[in-house]
Length: 58
Image (cartoon, rainbow, N blue to C red):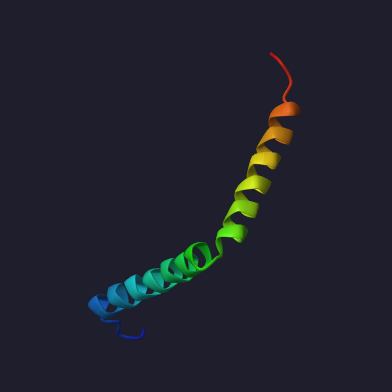
């Protein structure tokens, strides 16, 4: 027979894992200096401009 699984416990464990991953992402996003945030924004803007420049007209 299979292992007995408490569905409430499994649901809570999955929610905790999601919370941990969300907290990890927030630490990365909000734990940066102002200069790092500006550099990241500048780089994403540059990448966006390069991509837009390579688009072909219909």
